[in-house]
Length: 72
Image 1 (cartoon, rainbow, N blue to C red):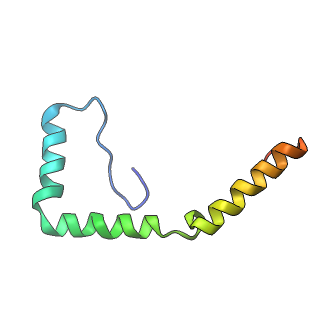
Image 2: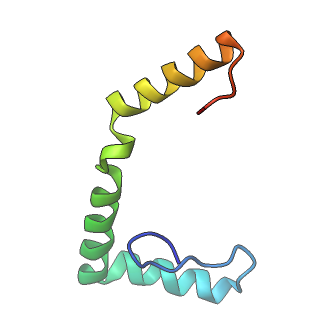
């Protein structure tokens, strides 16, 4: 289970399971709309905002250069 309640298909699942999942996403307008909405909500989370990611990256680089344990 992934965030938003969607199930993942096992990478080794039979071909028919993959086709069924793709068919559902492609041909079911309600399913497509639901997946699209969930993807948008996930993409716009505050913790992955570009400014937040840049701040975190700079923090990690600063810690690394200073010889500190990253994140502490």
